Length: 321
Length: 263
Image (tube, rainbow over all chains, first blue to last red; front, top):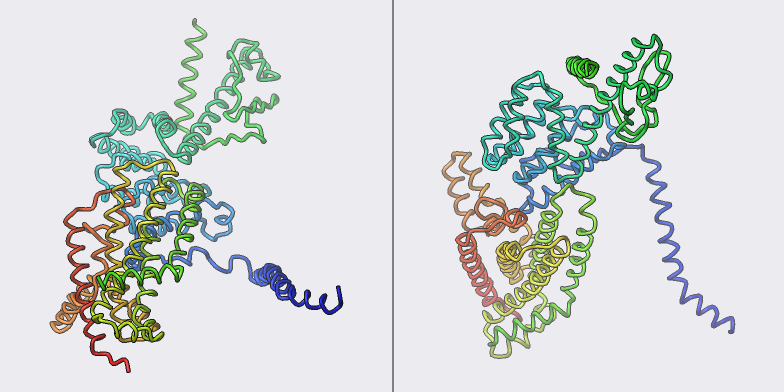
């Protein structure tokens, strides 16, 4: 190949090579520009309009699509934990986003249902705004008055997050009167109205959610709560047997397995994630293993008393036999 | 027959201009949406696919109606092909009507293929019953009617203005067409008789695009997304309106065109 033809081949390739080089340079240059901006300079929520009425007016017939976009944004806003942790108020704009979704498309049942859980769950899991959750559900009930599930959820928020058992019972009673509602709602209403069985009724509720919900996130939430209650109850039970063992043998059991050998219980349960509970013999304290995936939840003291009384009654009857 | 010949040629010209390439974008959108929506939204995958599909049909169609519609007459003038055409025994109204129908056929082909793509995406994404599948048709039809009116508006402007201005005017009218009812309400709020009168006149003069996007007080796309039926009366009256309004616009376009001097 002569030097002239080599030069002409180069000339042919040069524009392509220059284009490729320029293309490859775009990323580092853009990254450099991004690195000059302080973190969180743009609040992603503010990209979106916050007035439901304005968004609806500007939708130009595409309300349904915009509702989907805002719903996906609300899910990302709620679901991205790291992004949420960086905000001053973790879920400040969540009610506004849900308002926009339901204004654009008032028929999205799951938005009311899942949205109320997002709003009602206490910080850091949710927005810790159960009153906003009730407001959202009320909007849903006014739009879909024949939907018993919304009344069921409203009662649930009253019951679990606001501890307003009377309102919960009344709301479930209203749900029970709607066509298509399952027969067990009446039972729930009765239990809600009788305050004593608060946590027992809550367990029933979570079980219903776990068994009946078609949505994985709602089922997981229910499972977490049931497991949390299970952890508390297991620990109370084991500590109760440790106490009984100590009273009988004038010494604390060296291990939890000793309780089985001494006939206080037929087996020592593992926590709901499958890990054995930790036992500290010098104090008789039972606790979750630090590496366990199960999480305890704070149950009311009066429920602990009710549970312990039940356990004591069962133990005494068992001793008599 | 002459009208059909012009329409056929306009359609062929549109195909040659690669208008239907937007279908590739639509296909990509549908495939992507069915792949990623499960991770982005809690439930409602089917609803989002319908919303996305119908909105795309409407948006792509409107863009085609505006940007092709504004060039229908202007291009013939600029290329001077109009001289060859009008030298033949072709009436000017036949020319306008033929051009209009040609673009409508292009839009119809576009809408039909996109609807088939949407139905296929729904079928691939867990199946769709025949009943639900048919419930999308009235919504698609109403979207097509809105495209027919938008095309007529674009053609009207194309008959006397430049493409850039025609695009701007048509777009503005399309936006105003969604706020027509609000215009009337605002005028009523002012409680001034003149404002009410002017708003009343504008309400009927301006194209009422919301006649095609809202039926039975609900967004047409929303009704389709929940596979709810749209009342036949709403569809029938919207059809009457589209025919009437488009006919008036075409008549005005023809009148303007008749008085144009091509020297």
